[in-house]
Length: 127
Image (cartoon, rainbow, N blue to C red; front, side):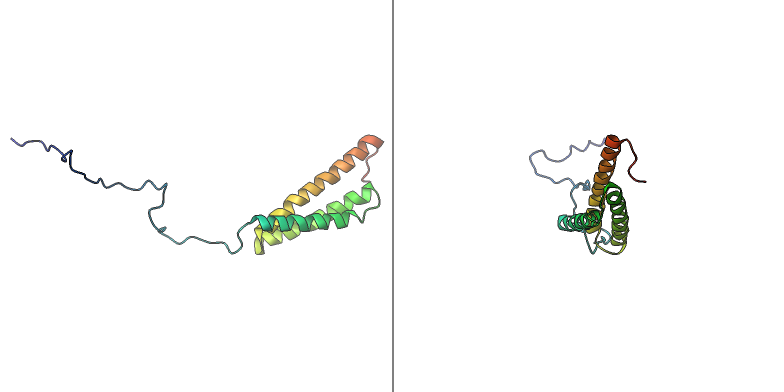
C-alpha cells in the first residue's frame, strides 16, 4: 500500500511559483506601446486657454452694443473651434483643449449678457 505524500517539510523554506496578477508589471510589455508625439500637458492647456481668451476679448471689443458683441463672440468662437479641431488632428491636443474650454466659457458669458438684456428690456436683443 502506498503511503500518501506528506508534502513539504514544514521547517524547510520552499518557494511556490505564482503567476503575476498583472497589477504590478513583471517585465516589459509583450508588444510595443504607442507614445504620442504631443502629449497633453498643463502648459499646453494654459497656452490654448490664454490664446482663446485673448482672441475672444479682441473680437468682443469690436462690438458696440449687446447685439454686435454677441454676434462677434459667436463668430470668434466658431473660428476658435475650427482651429481647435485642426489642432486635435494635426497639432497639440492640449492647446486644443484649452481653446475649446475657454471658448465655451466665452459663449456662456455672451449668452448670459444676452439673457440679462432680454430680461431687463423684454425685447430679444439679437435681431
